[in-house]
Amino acid sequence: MGKNLNGRYALANDIGDSIEHEWNGGKGFAPIGNKSNPLAGVFNIRGYKIIGLYIDQQFEDYVGLVGYNGGTVSNCYSTGSVSGDNCVGGLVAWNYDGTIIASF
Image (tube, rainbow, N blue to C red):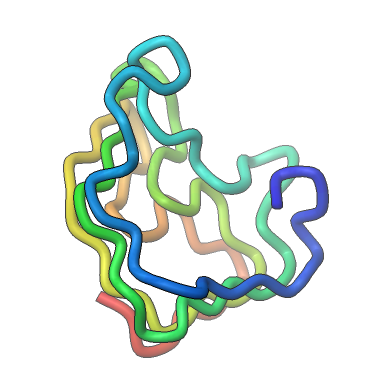
């Protein structure tokens, strides 16, 4: 997904506690999109759950499941621990001309 942020993506099942703290040198999940390369496509979670999302990027900006959104994020339920510096969100850190539908 990170190589084509203009595509259309959907989850096929729940993701639970599989987002390990050890990923990315202990920083956890790498946010989808950033300021220089935002999500511009569609990410439809289809009502599945993302449980236990872990991101620890205390000195980084735009930290969330989606770091920088200019596309569409829909039908998402996400819980976990997300930490960053500026523009931090559990679902979307920065929504720039994007759309968020039926998500919490």
